Length: 251
Image (tube, rainbow, N blue to C red; front, side, top):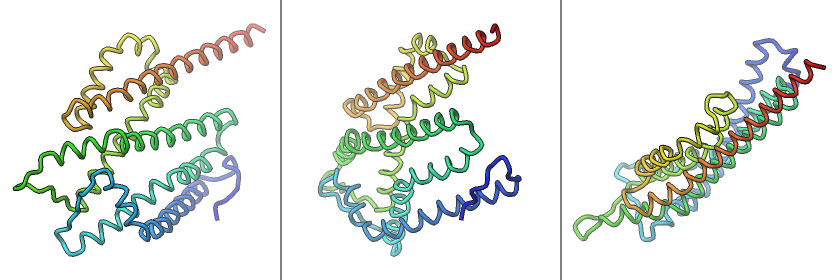
């Protein structure tokens, strides 16, 4: 059971003990859900392969199918328990924060999870089908597309996680802006370079066909603008806070 003792009154060892307890809770939740996901692993695998109709997976080692299904169940459990994991992290940190900081951190973590799943969803429905069609287009009567289950799962997961991470761009801009490391003027003046970088990232993360790359460039451009807006908001809040501090000192 996780201690409810105030963080102010806790010693360093007690902090470590609470952290250990919360990590144990996270691991137990993942393990329990992994067992549940393993019971439905065929349906999970169907979801990952439904974008490529007629694709048949193979395995080249006796235990490959079994171990790959276990790995897929664990990965699915990690994805599903991500909000719970974030909650445990928040519960550990929040007692040491002020109410305003707690609300800010909670909002930040919520946006991180939301943007991650938004990126995964976009990648799965908007880009992944075209990527699969592109790679399957190289098949011929003499060259059959035979994917092993382990390699296919690794490809799909890395592909979708990449989109989930790319969708964190606005939060990265907001963090850098709040630390005064970048400004809205800097982002505005370097839009053309950002577009070039977006094109390079799209070329790396997507197949070398124009349509897939455009599907990646568009959300990256939108995320850049969202990050620009967040930086502007953080600058205005910082300016307002500075003005209030000056007025307080004058009074």
